[in-house]
Length: 178
Image (cartoon, rainbow, N blue to C red):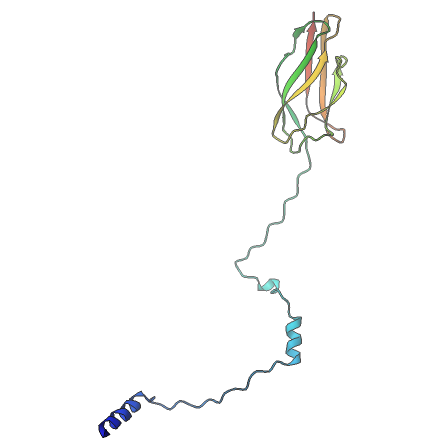
C-alpha cells in the first residue's frame, strides 16, 4: 500500500505545472449605464457610406430614355403595282408592306392621311394607322373605288404621329382606269 501511495504522489507531481500560474481575480460583471443605453439607441442601424466594403462598385446611373422618333419605311407593293389597269368603278384593296423603323410604337392616335394627288378614290382622306411596335413589319390596307372616267389616277399617303407630325416615307397608289 505504501508503494501505491508513492506511485500516486509521483503521478500527481508529474502532472503539476513547472512554473506557478499567477492568480487572476475574477472581474465584476459589466454594468450597462443609462448613457450607454442612450448611445446604443441613437446609433445608426446601417453603417455609414464610408464603411462600405472596398469591393463594392457604385451602380451606374440609369441612361435617359431617348425621345420618341417615329419612322415608316416602304418595303413593297403587295398588289396593284403602280400602273395597274383596273375597270371603271371597280373596288380595290391596295396593300403595302411597311416597317416601323422608328424607336416608338404606333398607337391608336397615329394616322395615315391623303397628302397629294387625285381625290382619295372613295376612301376617307384620313385613316387609322395600324398599330405596330418598333422594328415590326406590317401590311397597310386601304379600300378604294376606281373612278368611272378612264385615265391615270395617283394619290400619296403619309403617316402622322399623335402630335400631328408627318413621318416616314409616303406610300402611293397609281392606277390606270380603262
